[in-house]
Length: 143
View 1: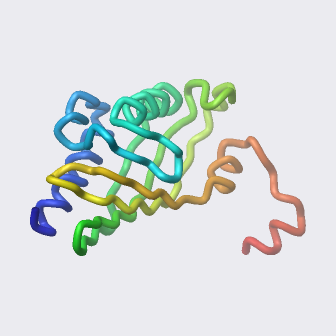
View 2: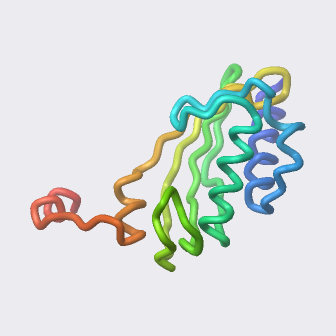
């Protein structure tokens, strides 16, 4: 696959997330997919994770800000927004909105996402949901 084709596959995957269309996972994700960050193994595990996200954040949306490909890898930097309207990992809905910057690295094999590494600021995400508060010292350090 060309670099442009690999980027197009990642764009299709993000669009499937935005439309909550998990039926396209079979076309876009390898059966033996591995998410190294979230410890997900297999396409079904990814589908279950996405379903949980959709139930937790009904207006979950991903906006691609940059996408770069080299070799068999695609890097995507994006903004994710949503409102916490359903239970998330045992946390009752807070009704709070969040905006978070993410970077994902995808390894492509035969036109499908085979591996993924995810980088985000989970601490800031939890703060936006109101789950944690920074101490005064942390507030000064984060400026």
